[in-house]
Length: 348
Image 1 (cartoon, rainbow, N blue to C red):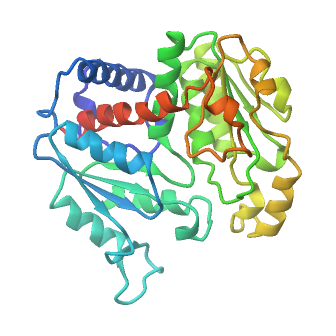
Image 2: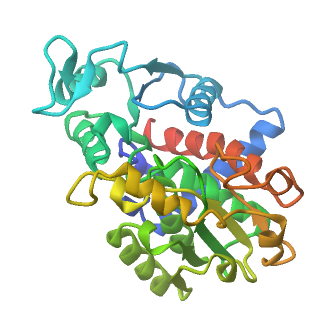
């Protein structure tokens, strides 16, 4: 497809993009990955372009993959720590001489660079579900350059692209691939929903037979579930929600067990702002764990996936994440390639 329509667009959630557009992004990512592996550099693509990266939360893969990607394409990424600048804040959340309204930050950066990327979830918005997504969309409203979501409390679209690119590489496509996104136990309850929500959006959009396995208390956003159901209908594939951890793994090609927060952790009206209750819920599902026995439930060629960092010994045993079925590190590398694809398309 023609890619002129990509230029200047925000990348906040895959729900804003069509299946054909996402397929194009994956094709570009694979092309860039192959060319780079052959020693063909592409530092002309974003030569002298600037990406501003605002991290309200810590990061390893996201920060380094964006910085490396910009360097490889001839541009530069500026790391901005909200604690070391006037923290971008929404109206009504300002603190004198400590914050600066998002509208002002967005317009100033838009005069100096070519895109703004933001990571924000959890504590910076007091675990108000959707609060971080609102900040990112407010940046997008005020900035006339692309705004890229490096993870908010609702979506992690770049991780989802890396997920489906990994599936495409391992299985050659998506039709007939059973993709299981499952909750898994962690002693830490402070886990956003962004990864599982974006993973099932991407898998169902691309045509996988998608399964969401989670305890009832870990139910995901109804709007996301509705979107996945529509994608499954569009593709002639299936989408299922179950609370059977081991049963969901039967015959699966992709097993993706990961913790995310129970509803009570969030502020009303979504939750109760009750970390203690959330911890009690988590601790009642300690047997939801990726073990060799769990992996054996899947297809003989099944792969283990995780966005990382994984909580080893809780979410997953070493024998799985370090074993022959693990695709977690291929998946992590693919963050670099899908991000380069999106940036090369929207920042031209």
